[in-house]
Length: 185
Length: 185
View (cartoon, rainbow over the protein chains, first blue to last red):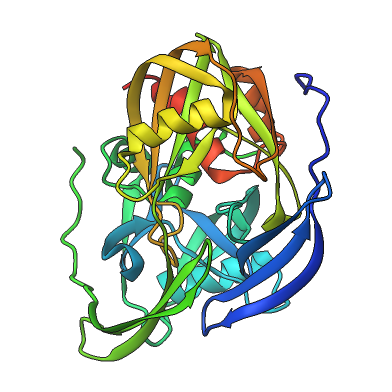
């Protein structure tokens, strides 16, 4: 591995922590922290249960994509299947559950591709990226209020949609570029 | 462009909107929305001012990286320079400001690489990715309370650190893989 430089220690320690907004989806905390130099500061962040996303291969060149409306951005997005972890749910179980619930598919083979931190400035969220193949359609069972359209696309086409700005969702873009760079680990 | 399928319309419209947490950093909204099928639902999300990130080239093969402590994740991260937009600030001005404030560099040449949506499930955030070269050191002026270490690295080494899990910040990973895939647009 290429050598990293000597690093300074900027560790921040918690002085006090408060749940300042306890929403149905978002749990916002505001902590007083002590910086490495002894000064005090405030940190606000979202406590997130973590999430998974899945590159699900219909065949060697074709994956499942979804299109859904994302209210915070007020438009539709093309994404790979993804979802949040339930409490104490192992990430791979979430991935299997979401692939059935959102797309209606089971997969005979699963592998871990990467672990990513999508919003380190204001969220604890972590995303586990899995690959899946050997798909078998077992019928979708969308959550109430979930409205999305599943379709198949060539990986090469999806990567071209990234370049053209048709796909802008960061997690989806990253999964596609990672696959193009390294394929199956 | 590869053909996209016929898409359904899942547009959600705002019935009412409420600022439920007005923090120093995080502005959380809770909206009642009408779904495409007429049913009502709630949407919670963070209103974010938007952000920039910069692939800043010291030479053709070397970029600027930063290492800083990210409290929500309770550890240090290696990232490319980034920062939030001030109200009404054009994104390119933010990029130039952050490169000076965080790294102490001006650049003679700037170009836009991509626009990305990092947290479409619960944030309005958009990230504008720029490239910069022709760097000239003018001295850093970090914000009070900002504590980070700037260092130079080969792009190829940084990409290897992604594969090895040393770099897991999604925006940084995406910028590096995008550069490796397409270079300068």
